[in-house]
Length: 342
Ligand SMILES: C[S@@+](CC[C@H](N)C(=O)[O-])C[C@H]1O[C@@H](n2cnc3c(N)ncnc32)[C@H](O)[C@@H]1O
Picture 1: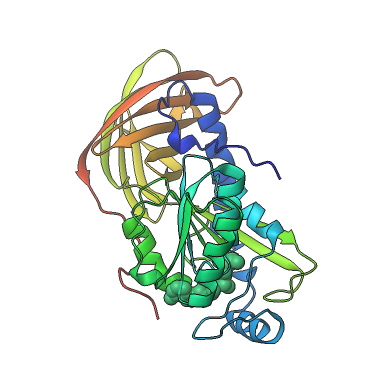
Picture 2 (picture 1 turned 90 degrees about the vertical axis):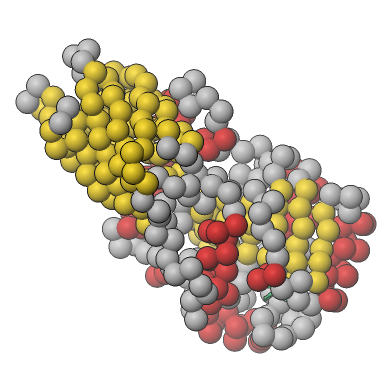
């Protein structure tokens, strides 16, 4: 399968130039998040953890069964994980619990990435390093016998995981603390509970016997930067005016809630999120007696944010312009418990 380099809006150096694509990408992700937040929770789709462990013991090629089973990810699912993680040649990929190394080795062969995998099982680590050598990618990827909780993740652009749900939840604080905003986390079958995924897919995998037989779930998260606090600036609105805008936001994972005023008058916040370090805010404000949609998409850099504004829901927008915001007060994001959840 030919996987193109990432088209992540997160890495766009010039948000103003990339404006239409950024707004379109934000719209797709927003729909997915809103559907999840509205109750179609990812949890309902995942197989139960005990089903995974039991089926792993019963059906899978169990090379070693310590506290965690070894179950390889089918190649079709590996391909989809790499596509959803937007893995490209410049990325550094880490697979936590790497098994026979197939995820990292596939990415090195097809996209030329660098990276590593860690696994507790020395046999699997030996096997993965031998396969990397055979595949001619041992200069780019390596495998180490190491506990995932003792693994430094700070270099990773993408982390992949196919681990039991409780292990995912134990790793969640570490991922959120160590990964840079904009890094991606991709999991097979299990998710991170109330940290809603930014993307997900269900695949038909007839040969899969574990979890929900015949199906695989792939989830993708973009590590959010810090967007909470009080932001102030000026933005253009319909009719040629430039009005002061103020956002007062609280952040939980990537989602932001709070209030907006435009020209000193309250507006209605419809949706707000951090996509890596990009702040995306949609609100409705009354202009000329009508409720008009306003969308801000701005790249944050510490206490400053700059980017674009779209006014009106039509395409082309009623008005497009630029916005610069500064944060007078920061409010740290709530990323859930800082210690492992048991
Ligand atoms: C379900 S397999 C996934 C293998 C591979 N990532 C794949 O998708 O094909 C999970 C692997 O994680 C490893 N593992 C489980 N807990 C671990 C831990 N705390 N540290 C390192 N490896 C771990 C197991 O040995 C096993 O090989």
